[in-house]
Image (cartoon, rainbow, N blue to C red; front, side, top):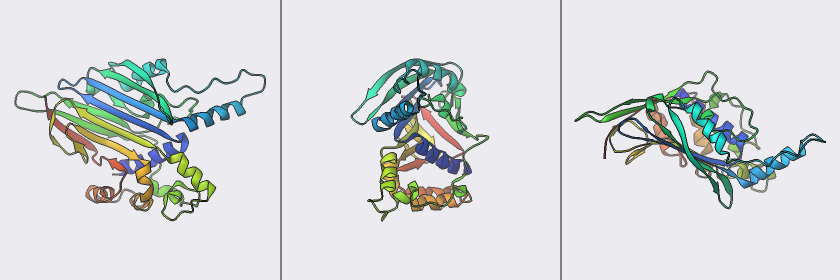
Length: 285
């Protein structure tokens, strides 16, 4: 349970540091344990423009002006495969561009999900990001199905040595904090609150596992058809539930999985699997 609470803290930290972005990862698994990883990253064009202005403003005099920030860098995406485990290969990518966001969609292939390891470091960081990755990693254990028996996939979250502090260690919220800004009744005219709301607007992080077949049994907190959700955080829907999240964080992890499920069920905009081991049994199509 404490692992889940640290994940909340990490997600909040990433949002604060990285501004408005959308990241989704879908791991697709076949009957033989092979599969693909589809990763999409979108960053607000406003944030990109602000970072470019920042780099220009702090560039040393007499030096060559810094190059504009570029999110779509195929070579870096190709190199990212090395951090995902053995026998993971980069199969392609394309640039994404919308009215408000820019970014990329990339795809990787793996031969054996038992050798796959996913964490924040697997994805290329934003340009000029210097922070050390201390996030938990997702590990996978797969057993092939036999005649009359389904294939079994287990997803484990490995503890990080230096994970982010649990939410109950955070300082009390102030008038300029994201928590306070999200509360109903916060003064919209306050420029600091408005700036925070703008910064978090559009934030979404999701990770899911999809099997190439039919799920016959699972302990997943959230599953639909052939897909189970590891995490799905949508700030626009979540922003009105800061009081409930504060109550969950204040527990310090001393609540049961059943109690946590009950709290999270009433909070729109967030889905987090609460199992230390997420198990999925499935048969082929």
